Length: 312
Image (cartoon, rainbow, N blue to C red; front, side, top):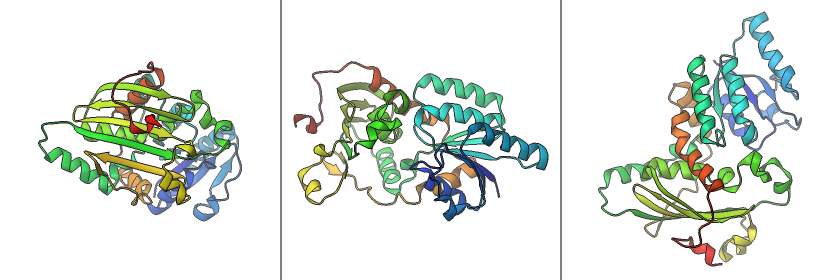
């Protein structure tokens, strides 16, 4: 049984981490969040100590080690994107491995700095790339690897997940803290695409607004037109008629990739691999972090292969 701490216990994604710690028969000894709406902990670890101040949380971890010889093995990080770097460093300073939600950092140079610190420490940095563990995505990669296709795959990626007015008020609406739309809701798709179709050869941005973005990515083996949005007005008519607020579609050579199901246990599967020292580390995420960084900082193109939704 390993000892865990969790930072960001009040966040949206925290319950999946709490469940993964429980499902893998490990122990949560402490949790931290500046917000105290963490009743979800009663379902998983009601006896874990909880803190709303980082200083007291950090001191408690130190006292456990010094006074009771209780070592921290892992720190699960579910905090806002811009804080990941700092909290990973804290985990390594405490001699623990870090398990960090995506995006692991906002900029490529943050990866280089963390790699240097990781090399000097006893801990390891892991991130959650659950799409790489999805059966449909694994099957797609295996098929691409085995198929000697002469031409590149043509892919359309569309992801619309409606968000209310709260989004702009929260840290997610602040690009300096979240990295913007492409980073916040798209980074796991870019990771999946680079994992399956190879290195990026071209990155073109056609639209970059606060609540939506679109562009064109060319990989070694694929041409990808992508569109991401949190604006409910972008939903297709048939989705609105069903009163659904999310639309996810990936077509590959005009064939739909079905991967709507099978997400519920992927965090637990991620933890199982991490506990076997087979987690995804810093180099695995480098490509997706470079992609989203370039999307944020490149100029807007007026020509090229545009996603069909841009015609709207």
